[in-house]
Image (cartoon, rainbow, N blue to C red):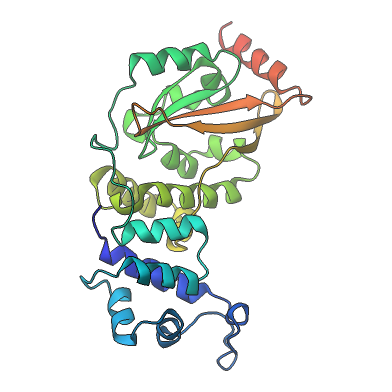
Length: 277
């Protein structure tokens, strides 16, 4: 896996600047209670200040696995952030040989998607391009059928489509969460055209995205409960699951299963009936 020195340097700087000094037993610097100095990180990690400065500057130097692990410990990185840092340093799992966006959905995955007739589901590429969706998803989010193919990317729509923003009551939290998950999944591929082009467009189009992107947060996308507020049927309570087919590791099947005792299943059926009247 390639070493991305520039991204590694930016990530180290962002995490160093966000550390609360008291959390690691460091006194404030005047009135400053957040952020460590470079020399402090270097000392706590057992590396020279010159070497650590080179890392933050994005110079073409390769830290050892031991140094990366030590920096992760000093900077109090989460497991996900630690894995991300390892990837930037060249110690992650190699990317699949196929491109990040195959452009089409394999027939067997399309059949699986169409068989999910009771709840919304979609197939996305690893760059979050939406490649396919079922009729229930279209009933919940009808704009997917009409948006231009070049804009049919979930992260793009999340930050640019007012309908989708209104559909998500906790949009601010969800937006930050999705940006952190996208960065974690992209890893060292951010300089590849599908990823770089998307991020560049979003930085121009959305101040909210720019703020989230510049925070350098890293997170995963686990199964979790989601809440949508549909303009026609009201509140929808679902459980989101993301599955990766072993034979197509650059694809994700995203499903939204109705939570019991919430009336969501009945509301989804009502939406589908209305869509085909």
